[in-house]
Length: 113
Image (cartoon, rainbow, N blue to C red; front, side):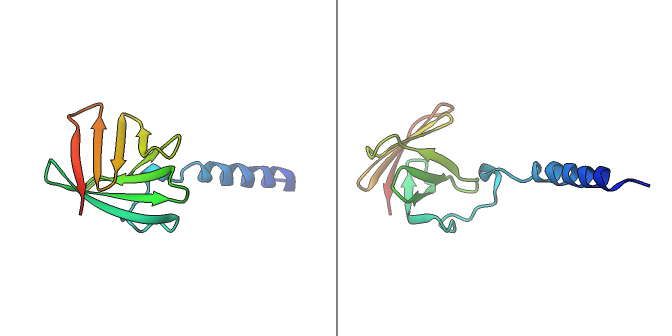
């Protein structure tokens, strides 16, 4: 039989272990435009012929870039200069135009629909 303190410790360890298995925000299932914290959404058609959506968050310093048929990429800006950066990707937005620069491919020029 397990005494009460040991039982409590085992329960706490089990709770901690299961909490470490939750998905990170980048691994979440995401429907573009469905994030409750997003304050706006724009859809761009790019030079590769595909549509990319951009969800803008409060303050304008963070966006989710959603490539077609892929999970969103969270990007941040250091100031309101409309240049957002992430792991291996830079996005510049100026008016109705957007440029996506990736470290693993050519730049894409995009225009808001």
